[in-house]
Length: 166
Image (cartoon, rainbow, N blue to C red; front, side):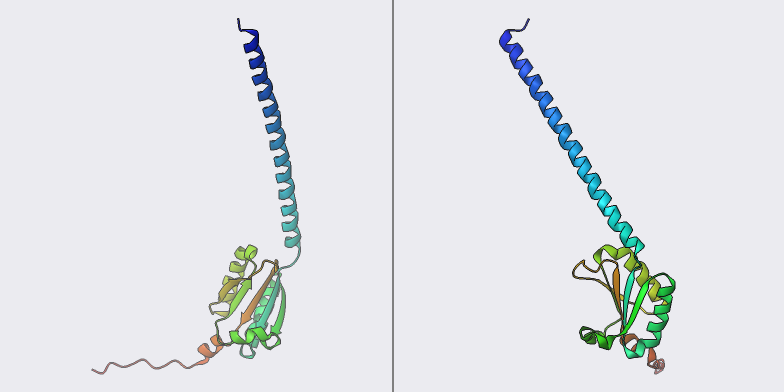
C-alpha cells in the first residue's frame, strides 16, 4: 500500500495530466476552427474571381494592329474580357517597341497565364515572353504587349543560301 504522501503526489500528477489534456484539446479544436474559417474565406475569394471574367489589356504597336485585332477576337471568343489599346497611349511601353512581345500576369495566375501564352503563341505563330507583375494587386488581369519587333523580323526577305566555292 502506498503512503499518503505518495498518494497525494499521484493525484497531483493525474490532475496535472487531465488539465494539460483539456488545454491541448481546446487549443487543437480552436486552431481547427480558425483553419476552417481561413479555408472558407479563401474559397469564397476564389469563387468570386472565377465568376468575374478574366480581364486582358492588349497593347499593340501600329505594325501589329491586324494581329491585335485578330487576337482580341480570339480571346473574346474564349470568354476573356479584352481591351485593345494602341501602345502609344502608354508612354512606359515605348521602350518595348523593339523587344519581343510579352505578357504580364499576376503571380497567383501563373497556370492560367501560361495556358493563355501558349494559345497566343499558336495563334500568332511567334514566341512571347512572360513576366509576373511586381505587386499582386492585379489579380484577374493580364497585360499583353504586341511589339513591332516580330513584324520587322518576319517582314524581311530571307537571304539566299551561301553557295560552296568549290
